[in-house]
Image (cartoon, rainbow, N blue to C red; front, side):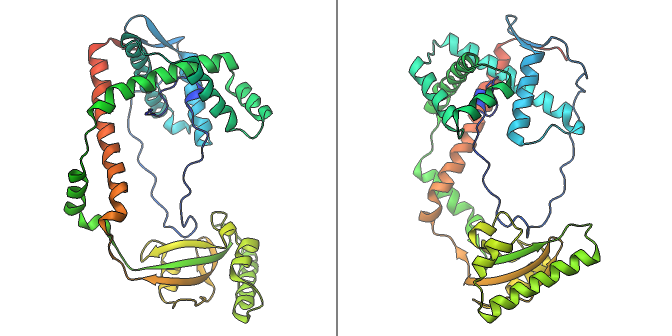
Length: 340
């Protein structure tokens, strides 16, 4: 079913699935923080009603604050003060769009059957390990099961309305997918890579010389065990590596291309032959013991291997464009008052 992020005005719209794991977390180059866009300041104390939609529907302070809290829960952190205006404005826009879509669902006589609602409630409930955990989440959200059921019904109405609008308009032929592949060869050209594993003995940026020395000594001892054949590399990674993303997989980082990791790690890895173990390598994250796996020479990925990925990407792009147009038309035809 098609849906849109955060358009539900309750916790029912929130997905409890974790985001995809990012590979090479500790070896990757750090990224610069994005600049903060300028928007109209949001009052520190919000009025009871923050927006009106088509004269009859109001967006309340409680609804906006509940949606912001849901965002925070999903992100795993509170909104930083410097981003408050941007987040509140974005969430308010999403709530307005949600109400426009909900009114459109009424106009189109869309129906969400009770069994569909109950099925979605069951999916949400089953995403928690126990019934008690689900009940605790309801209390944290400040809602009841009946309120969640009603908000879930609204979410389904909105999702069905979007599906009704977008699905007939989506038109992606096999020729379009092939043409994208033919016109963008650089996107499917893989460079030389090495399948790598590592054991990381991490150090904090403010570690003392004594602490760094202890971490280095630990790394050296582990490497000696691997070289001597008295311990298995993967087992040592599971037991000692501080890279939580890879330790459980025996330190497996997957295939790494030149330049994907920080410079000391990159240089050491590409100096190894298949099966070789590096000396202890120091990076900003700590001390690494690197094991080189199979080398891949790279080249153009065959169309058959990436066809489904291209189709999915192009469909997503087309869907986003259609969705933007749909919402813009609803706003143009409606009457939206933003009161903050």
